[in-house]
Image (cartoon, rainbow, N blue to C red):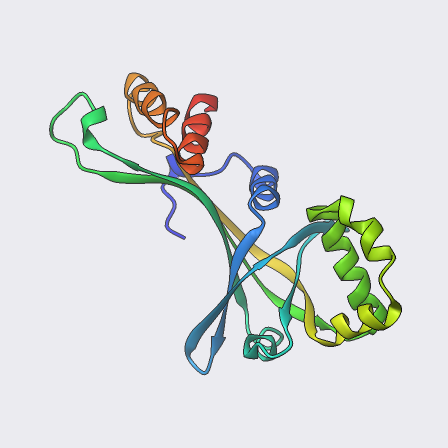
Length: 201
């Protein structure tokens, strides 16, 4: 990821917090020289200092067959906003785009054991919709095992974590506040999120 100095995240903890907030991401894996990709929700955990991204594919998804032997790239990206040059004091400026993204690299390991796969699904439920756990607990073991047989669960250990937070840090403070004032009135939640990040910087 090309990241000029002024667009860097403050630290690893900030990157991880961003990943947890925007955890529906794209995993890209090499297949015979060509990239294949799937958009899925992830569970982000840290075990003994190791950052792990957990997720699952539909069993029929061919990408599951390539993630153990190849390094995958997981792209976390959500808030973004077009920035018009009308917000700058000088006329000699060009349009750009503000955005935040984190790229995580690593090889994955397929989880084979049935109970471990069910536990992985329960961990997803606890993160994304804890209120559903009661209903889940009343489902039959047969149903749960059927679900587990239909998915490929994996854990990806992150070996490289890169991030870029481009929120007009290279512009004058007055210009940045002008951009934030404009974006926070937007009907788009992603643009309002960028405005909030500008204000907090």
